[in-house]
Length: 406
Ligand SMILES: Cc1cc2nc3c(=O)[nH]c(=O)nc-3n(C[C@H](O)[C@H](O)[C@H](O)COP(=O)(O)OP(=O)(O)OC[C@H]3O[C@@H](n4cnc5c(N)ncnc54)[C@H](O)[C@@H]3O)c2cc1C
Image 1 (cartoon, rainbow, N blue to C red):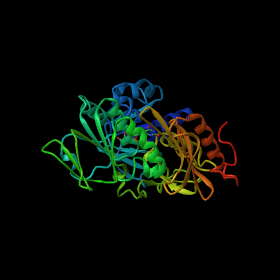
Image 2 (image 1 turned 60 degrees about the vertical axis):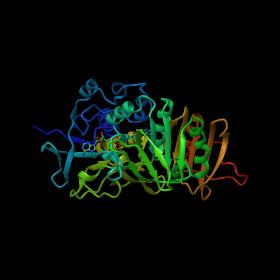
Image 3 (image 1 turned 180 degrees about the vertical axis):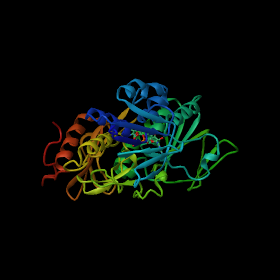
Image 4 (image 1 turned 90 degrees about the vertical axis):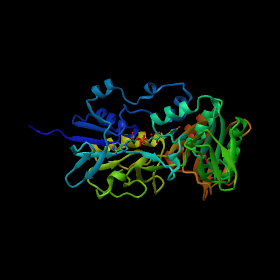
């Protein structure tokens, strides 16, 4: 009997659900095995800081894959078990159950995990937000309008602050830079957007980092480096995430802040690819290595890898325009490209006062990024142009070379 080809995907979340679906859509009739550390069916993470945290939906509403669909796609789901080691020479992925899984192709999409400074989680009432269980635990902690300190003004921290405030909590957001999201958007625009949080009643403590958490058993106080103290019944730590690659140690697969891949998302091991938050690959459109922790990339990269597994290297490689969105205080922020805080930035449409504007970021006369605030139509056009041209030049009169709005 001829043995069927087997594709194993490590990590059963967005990137790998997309890989599995794309394999079947493209007619792959071999075995597809999804190995996932979480016991539940794969689910979507963006609602964790928004609708699920707000109590507007439940975990069953945010599934990425149902049992019926898994059966229809003939997927072998191994949930509640971890990939624990990899032997690329023998083409074997070992599970923490001790089972060796032979593969013809392997996709690594083990995502990222929240950072937590040593000792902070020894106190009750200190939360992170990565999984549905985390979100449900935090949702319970937000009942009764407690005082909430959110540590870190990145996207997740800002969204948690927004949702907690919407639930009537007394919220303080702590960010060492001048304003939340300044690391991505730069000081000027981040300060403009901070006004939305202030208007919603979020207290901002910017310019100082957290020195230590204090409390007896439960967290009670957050001490900042400028000597100030924030009193809190719950603390949410949103200081970024690290790629989950520890299980690859000893495998020989190259890892440097993510699984290192070429422009085809191929790792240093034969027939082993990576996708999603865990992958660091060379984006040919920008000519640089990237690791992106956003939904659209995980989805597109998962599908790209499936195609490459079946059809071989794709002309042009994996060359997306990075894209992310965030919902805060009733406003939709969308970001495309790779804006850098040191880029020149200006608002080309709308205004901060209207809470509807488009800001463009430019580096050496090239468009490096776009922020659209409540302006989804403009964003569609900018994304298209980015994909076609990888940024475009400014005319002598200061306008962009082509009108971005269709
Ligand atoms: C609270 C929150 C809100 C977000 N909101 C937005 C948003 O509004 N917009 C946006 O663009 N992006 C958002 N994101 C980011 C987006 O959800 C992620 O980029 C996306 O989930 C990445 O998918 P992934 O499949 O690469 O990894 P993940 O979703 O992290 O999944 C990885 C999976 O692998 C499992 N795993 C880990 N190690 C192993 C192992 N050894 N063996 C087996 N399985 C393992 C993990 O348990 C996990 O289930 C948000 C993320 C979070 C956490």
